[in-house]
Amino acid sequence: MTQAIELLGINLQDSFVLSWSVENDRLTFEVEASIWPDSPHYEPPLPDKFTCYKHATLVFHGFDSIDGLKNMEDVKYSIDLNGSRDFGNIDVLEVQEDGYRVVGDFGDVTVSGGVMRFAVNPEK
Image (cartoon, rainbow, N blue to C red; front, side):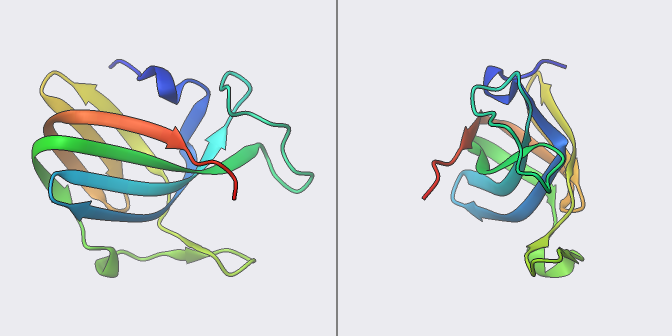
């Protein structure tokens, strides 16, 4: 398994999936990313946080097909103390010869072909 350079210092297993959507040949996961010192996006964590967390997007685009993705309405979510909801973590992200495999409460998803991009969103 190889890791994309933009995921350096990002712990997806400690990141929280906020939502996902598919539009044409674009699958987008909105996440609250767990960011560690190896990442250029790292900042010291807030006093009540385990590490630095920032909003980010994980996007697969230009793919041929996706399989195994559940509808968001069919997946149980957790509600945090502040009232926000999440759909668990990204348990597995594998770069494969012909695409990607992404696993979490949202499904065991196979993305055939395409390109993956991960971006930390600028603060508003």
